[in-house]
Each structure stands twice: as C-alpha cells, then as structure tokens.
Length: 468
Image (tube, rainbow, N blue to C red):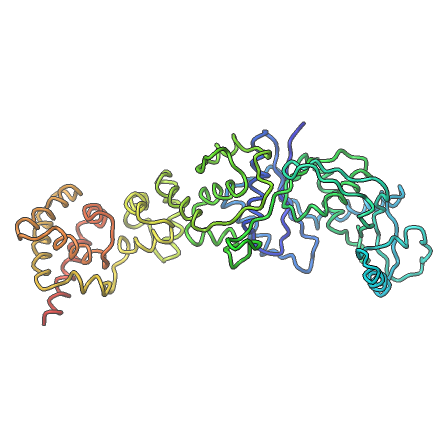
C-alpha cells in the first residue's frame, strides 16, 4: 500500500505546539515509509480564516523543516468538487434536505433535555420531506440507523460506536457551503490519504466520516488519534502553559531541531533514548510506540534540549540561526566577528540564541556604560595601573593570538604580585562592559587589537575620573 498522510490546519490562528506535533508525526510516518505528506489548509470558515494565519502556518512549517510533497491545498478552491459529492449523496439516497427552522430545532432539543435524552437531531425530515417552499434548507447525511462503526485506531486501539448514537449531520449549510465533516472526507478520498493522524479531539468526527466514506464506496484510511498535551497542572495545554505559536519559540531563541526532538518525545518513545536527530526520528518512528495517554509539556526539558543542541550541533548551522537574532538587535554580523566563532565561544554558557545574541553585543557594538555592579567590584584603586600595564604589553604584540594574550595576563599578575582575578576581571569589565564573558584569551582574540586597546584606554580614564 502506498502511504500518504496529511496535516490539515485551520487558518484561524497560529501554528501551535499541538498542531506542530501532529504535523511532525504525520510527516515522520510518511518519511519512514517512503510515502507522501500533504499540507491542506482547511479555510472554509470564511469568517475566522485569515491570510495572516495561513502565512503563520506556512512559516512555522518552513522553520521546522516539515516539507510537504503536495500542497498547500486550499479547501475554498474546491467548492465545486464538494457540491458534486453532495449531489451524488442526494442522488443515491444517502442525503436529504432538512427544512427545520432554528426555533423548531431548539424546541426539539429542549424536549429531549426534559426527557433526559441526549440532544440531537431526530431525523424528522428524513421521511417527511414535503416543505419545498421553505426559504432555508440544509442538507443532512442519512446516517445508518443500525449497526456500529469499528475504528481500529493505531494509537487508541479498537473503538466501537453504535450508529444509533449518531444523528444525521449537516453536510451543507443553508447558504450551500459544505461543512467540515464533508470537506474532510472528500479531500482525504480524492488525495487517497492512507493514514489520518490527528488529535484525539477528532474521535467524535471519525465515525461520521467513516459512514460518509462507506456511502461513497471508497476504501477507508487508517486512523491514529494522538492524545492531548497537558500543562504541568494537568489541565489542557493553553497559552498560560506556554502553548504559544511555534514561531515564538524561534523568537525566544530555540533551535528548530531542539523543538522537533522535544515534540517527538511528547508522546512517542524509543526505549530510553532522549536525543534524536531528524534522520533517527524518521528511521525509528512507529505509531505503535505512541503513548495512548496524554503527555505533559515541560518547558525546562525543552530548554535543556535546546542547550544540548547548541552545545553539540555544527557551529555553522547554529550561526545561521544566530544571525537572525543578531539582526533583531540591530547588529550586522557581516562586519565583525564571524558568528561561527561567537557560537564556539558562547555555547557553553548560553541556553538560547536570544541569550547568546544579547551576551555577544560587545563583540560588535561599543557599550556606552559599564555594568554598575561589575564596575564597582573590579574598578578599584590601582586597577588603572593594571590595565595600563596590560595595554603596554598588548601594544607590543605582532601576532594577536589567544595563547600569547593569555600569557601576558598571567605574566602581568605575576609581575605585579596580584592574584589572577585582580588582573583578568578588571580587563574583562574594561573590554566587555560586564563581569561575564568567555575565557579572557578567547574574548581578547575575537575582539581584536584595536577594540581591546581602545576600550582599555576608556576604562583607564573612567577609573581615573572615579579617583578624583
């Protein structure tokens, strides 16, 4: 069997964590089986859908690297096809016109509640269909009244729903537009989707869609319903838990590889392995290893993974992402220190790329003031003499190399009978503006002779002004 999966978001908001995980699992399954992955934009909700949301979804998919073989397919461009199928269902007696008014439906449901019955359409227009002069009418699917729907769910196991529990759902509204359950069936049928992988909030839709597919006499896809994602408090994941746009994770300095790895482990496992490359995910992914229970979103675990990827990924790859964050700070990384070297220097201490970019400003931009605490602690009386001694020695160098620079710092401490910290820390504050940086030899080497000497002279003048 040829494998084809799909991801079908509604463009009524951003691509969130739950949607991204669904897209990832669908993508992985297709890649694992050398199949195809389809992106479908379910934009039939004309009031709530927006181009901004479409753009956000496409941008999120692109940033995550979830490429698709077909699409994006827009449902609003397929209304003619939906009408064909609706007419087919009418012609073969599997759909009918319903002329019930809103007041009539409300009265019916209230009566059902009083009888402590489940509110549902009672099929009154199924046989009594003579209200041809009604101004408004919808089209309902004639759901089987006997038997049951059996779903052999690849994650949840077997699910059985009796047909008598399902009412005759609307497949075309009074204005003629098709409804969700109809469009999904037609799209999955026409694209020959073999596996429908989606959130378990769709389980109630699945038996209805299966019955429509059976009426159309087509093969059924396999279904896999993914459990929901919970916040740390056990409630469904929401904005307050961090269920924000996928692109916000980019904005906060996360690597797409780290987010993909985290999403993969959010409900799926392969033994005790925690770290997976994308190729490993593709090779190892199996729906049978997806946990049927809900998963808990853990921001600290995601942050840990992100730092792991910053530490262990190719610095050139990380630098391409870092450039974006540097640009957000108004830094032109093409004129100055190579961002690859920044990554090598900063990756041990920075868990996000935002943190790395912020901590690396001084490599590209002169600072206007010193960190107050760092200056107060390290610019003591006599610090200007230490800095002057360093400047004199640095000025003599022909080759600006880290090992040589480090030795000068050591020799200065020995010559002036000072602990290393009394030399290195004033120097660090002088050239960085703060008390934290990569090793002093690395920092000196990356900044270059001109910047170092210029900043040391500025610090000497600053200390002398303090002594007045």
